[in-house]
Length: 487
Image 1 (cartoon, helix red, strand yellow):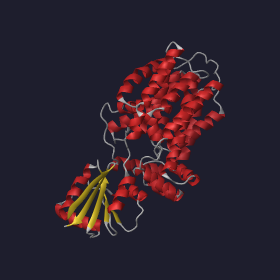
Image 2: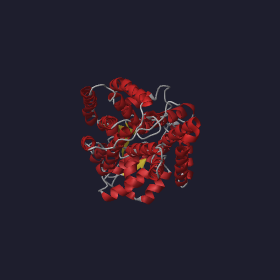
Image 3: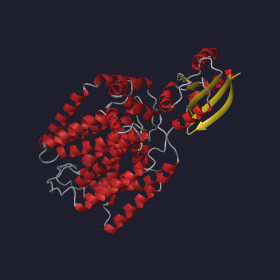
Image 4: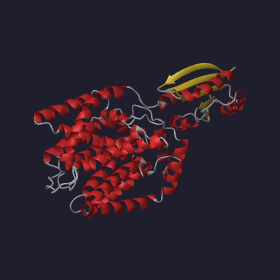
């Protein structure tokens, strides 16, 4: 008898009661208020400007541009339709992520209730509702909240495949959620790989008893792969692009811990949540999942480990692709583990007090999150350049891709806006003259705009300084603006 096996499956309790539905609605409402607060306070940064820009341009532009990107197209397609319904603003674009993030709260409740109890589901949803990590990506016009939601839905459907008699709705839900997940972000493939690995181990251990679920999973994966064939040639090209020209640095041997720090919100909170999550892990290992033929940890472990372990190991042995924000699907099972640990406390009053204390500690992180700008301030930088520049001035954007964000906010059409190539190494001294001449179009006044933290701009600024006189230097929310006059 394996550690994830049950000899009998107890009857499943109703997923919702009137009280649990009301509490979940209050949690979602509170989480919604936190996510909408200050939604447009910060400028769109480069990746958001790219997403919103191509979505505004329409579906043809989305499909063209995503073929040149490293992400699949589903989020951009959804954003295109979403902006048709709304006004196309940054606030509206971010609202799509808010909606997806609120869906994550509901999915966390459903998963926790299916795996352990309604109380566990409510606690998991409450922890995610006040999570600064979840709020951060709920307020970003990117695909991470959608990826988190689809991974949670796919996992819930994965659980249903392991019911004593897997149903057609469970099969269809799993197929649809998995297909959408891998069309949203490449890390969706790691979630899928974790579930396949778990089902493979289960099949090897339980043999005949595991065949129905394994067959349903295999059939669903085959349909998802068939649906992905349309994108497969582009995906292979993107893999080659990542291997040759991607910007992510190799992680440290313990770099995966950064993901858990982000899930917790701070190192101090992780010291509290980590041991509680371990208690929850042990509890899920030995408790039964009502109505399911496997113990809860069988479903939680691949959901938690795969989005972290697979890309982290690949980054150590091959091309670095590991970023803690990409592992956001694993933040939901982490919250479920913490909830399982908290609901193991012996007295109801103690459990309520412990949950309330953790919610308060998480809420204390939010004032700093709202007050300290984290995104690159292109809105402020462009406004500064437009206020200072005279008609006909050259605006040189370094490196070239920053033009996406600059063009997103620029309103004047009397400036010569020109991108400059990325220089990872300083060109020869005699090579700067034609580079600068082409970039400035011979204009006597030049504005050089670059990210403040981009160390590669140093030789560019120095080269401009040899040809021009630096008149002004300003920093606007992580964007540096250099104003030059011809000597």
